[in-house]
Amino acid sequence: MKCAMMFLVLTLVVLMAEPGEGSFWDHIGHALNAAKKVHGMLSGEELEALKAQEAQEAMKAQEAMEQRAFQQENEFA
Image 1 (cartoon, rainbow, N blue to C red):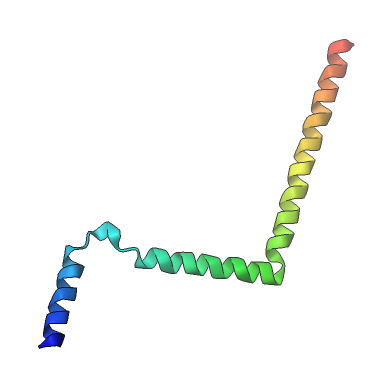
Image 2 (image 1 turned 120 degrees about the horizontal axis):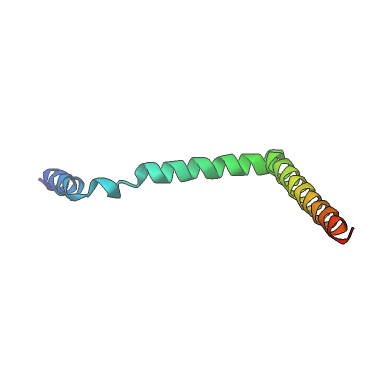
């Protein structure tokens, strides 16, 4: 009897839930992303990607400074 009542209660809970509230797969996705990040940190891939991104940003900043210096030289000439 207790099992039947538990089954009915859980069935009602599932049927009353809104479709958007099913966050089970969201949790699974977050767990997989976290596992990928941890693996990347342990293997050094994350660090290498971060260093490459910082180098690219530094190169863009350097190019922007050179462009501004070139424009200022042309304005004074």
